[in-house]
Amino acid sequence: MSDVYFTDMKMSSQDNMASKIRKLFLKAGYHEKITDKDFVAIKTHFGEYGNLAFLPPPLLRVFVTLASECGGTPFVTDTNTLYRGNRSNAIDHLKNAEMNGFNQITLGAPVIIADGIRGNDFVEVPVKGKHYSSVKVASAIQEADAMIVVSHVKGHELFGFGGAIKNVAMGCAPPSGKQSLHSEIKPKVKQKKCESCGMCIKRCPVDAISFNDEKKAFIDSEICIGCGECTVICPYDAIPVMWKTDKNALQERTVEYVKGVNDQKKEKIVYFNFIMNVTPECDCVYWNDMPVVADIGILASTDPVAIDRASVDMINAAQPLSGSRIADKDPAMDNIRAMFPIDWEHLFEYGETIGLGENSYNIITL
Ligand code: SF4
Ligand code: SF4
Image 1: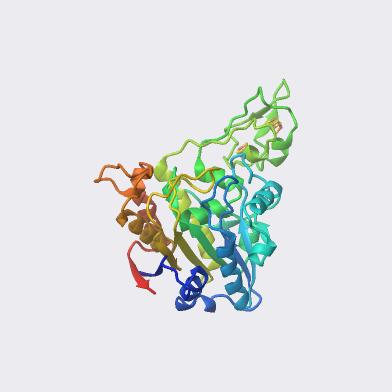
Image 2: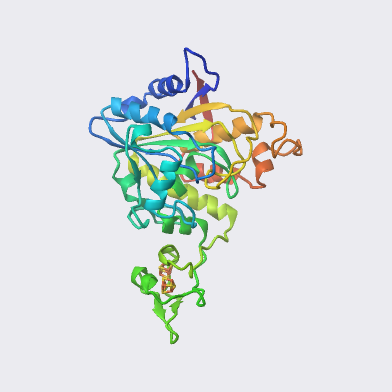
């Protein structure tokens, strides 16, 4: 059974958000996990511009302060997206982060897009799973000695909910890693859109792409290993992202990805989940619907399965908010399924099966 530390959202002049985070951090003993000269990755999500439900910069600044007090050198980080939005390369991503208020002044630490300008700066790390033998981890995150994973818990259109596991898997993967998480289907070139620039040919690690007689790119599916690199690099969107997937397989790949990242950091990774502003969609969308339940609290654990399981259980135990998307749901349906009809339990069952963490937890309330 894993320990999950919890504090509620009741604030006062004696106890505000910063002091509550500090108490959790110290009570859980996380100050002993960061040592002098450690590079500390504070992994969060900067929110797509237009979304206002993401965790605000002053909250992240508390973690920067705590990591600095331990002697660490913190930076606040995320990776580039697979879809073409405001965060698909590091330049746009940094501008988006700035527009949402994340910068050196507000955070007290630099913002680093962990997988580089084009999302091709990553390291392969080993993992023993049924889908992966290795996963791609953004270099700056892999290089960090310690990591504090700070997650906004909300609904998610693919997983049912998004918390620590989703923040680490999708959030530490470069775009090609995200492609492999989303789908095992091999890409195809839309030849009408191909401008014959040749960038995909240079990028393909197994020489599966060549020009045909019309000088349009063509993928040999017998050679292709489905790494997703060509999908990410094509500047003309001629190699579309593959989204089609089996939901259970997506959950299993996601859990295996977290295992790869988590194992690299050994004892030096901790997770904080904020159950506040529980919107139905992820912070990746450029809007946010009203929350479905009232703010619940902050959780901290070293176990990504236990902290997400506890978060889901707390959301499911809460009363749906009047006027929200789940206000008129079938009473027999849990709150997570009412947001998106997804069997979220498989994520946790598989997480325990591969030794990522435990479904049973012990709540320690501050
Ligand atoms: S990168 Fe895109 S446009 Fe360039 S050759 Fe490949 S498919 Fe064609
Ligand atoms: S998915 Fe990877 S292996 Fe397949 S064609 Fe694209 S770059 Fe090459």
